[in-house]
Image 1 (cartoon, rainbow, N blue to C red):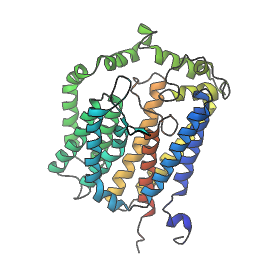
Image 2 (cartoon, rainbow, N blue to C red):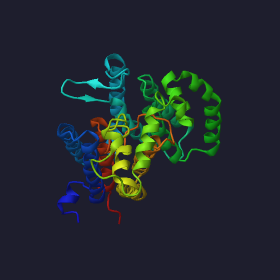
Image 3 (cartoon, helix red, strand yellow):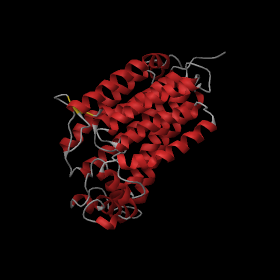
Length: 360
């Protein structure tokens, strides 16, 4: 087993198969959502190829080395977030850095960097972590969450914060600490509400009654729900969606690409997509279960859970169950940084799985 090429390249076959299946599915949906734009599909295909190369590169790095490099990687990612606030670009927001030949979104990278850093801190000592480690971890989580919130990008800020807090949760902190933290969070929730931008508050209110502003804040949700529902059991067929092709559905290649998929492939297609995601998530959970050290176990659990949450949040957002927060559908939505970030997560999982030491 140790002598075969796949093992020596640190490739986990089930994980790689799941990723490739979802990438191909993403390109098929994007071709329709982009009005059959070969150029857009080619760009996304190139990004996926780059992501696969990065994934295989990350897989070669032992988990212990990843833990050692975590503080330096975290510092570099914070510098990038600072540069976004100074020089960032975007439509009414500052979320991307323009490097000339390409743009990227540093906040997406924090979905990997924050849990990596927190897991490296927690794993240095025996579990459960002491108060000093918990407080230091909270600071590590809070700084990028604040910077991302300033862009503003509330959805990504929430996911980044959750990725770090979940590491702490699985590290075995006391229920008393969790209970007190929840009470504190509830107490300051009104402050958070007034700290939100007006459009963010409007998105939350629109969730409960989108018809109140059917041509304004509720338009995205209403058109998305119509597209999802009109797909029925078997869908209208590939390239035959009306909500997307008649341009009723906004952001159809990015945040709302799942609505395009539902309209064209129906419930049967959704089941196929969920099976593809389930393959990746189940493999990630298995890797976490068999991880040989605390760092690998915590990181594998959290990266797998974050993939699940990203899928859940996007699908819930598109079907009107959660506010629109701009979370892309992993490996399906158009966008380079999102794809590469997911691939990095997969590379870390492969590293944890394939660098296991034989125990006699």
